[in-house]
Amino acid sequence: DESPATMEMYGVGQEPMKDYAQNCLMARRLVERGVRFVMLAHASWDDHEALNKKLKKNCEITDQPVAALLKDLKQRGLLDETLVIWGGEFGRTPMGQGTEVGADLGRDHHPNAFSMWMAGGGIKGGQVIGKTDDFGLEVVEDAVHIHDLHATILHCLGFDHTRLTYRHQGREFRLT
Image (tube, rainbow, N blue to C red; front, side, top):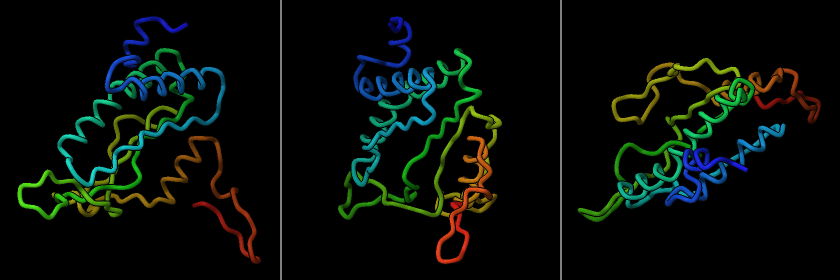
C-alpha cells in the first residue's frame, strides 16, 4: 500500500539499492507497528581489495534508502521515539592494503578508530564527538569507550545500565 513517491524515495525496485531499500522500507513499517527492535545489515563492506570501486557501490546501495528511512520516520512522527544507529564492525586502516604495485588496493581491519552515527530516539543532533589524527589511525581527542557507547544506547532505550547486572561466581557483572 505504499505510494509510488515513497517507493521512489527509498529506491525500491532501483538498482543497485533495491534489496537494501526494501529492507529499509520494511524497517519503517515494523517500527510503525510497534516492533521494538529492528536490525538491518548490509554485509558487503569488507573491502580488502578494489576499494575505489566497491566503496562507491556500497554507498550507492545504502545512502538513499537510509536517508529515506530517516526522512520517513521524521515525517511520520516516529524519529523522536526511534533510535537509529549506523555503524560498521570496526574501522579501516587509513593506508592501502595490497602487495602488487599499481594494484587496486583495499583496507585492512582497524580497531583503534572508527565512525558511527546515531539519530532520533533522544540523541541531540549535530554533534561530533571524537577526533582522529590526520591519518585516521588513532583517536586524539574525546575518545568514547565502547562501555560508554553502550550506556548511552541503553539510556536512549530507557534502561539504567547500572541496574542491568547478573551475578556470576559471587560477583555482579554488567554490559557497561
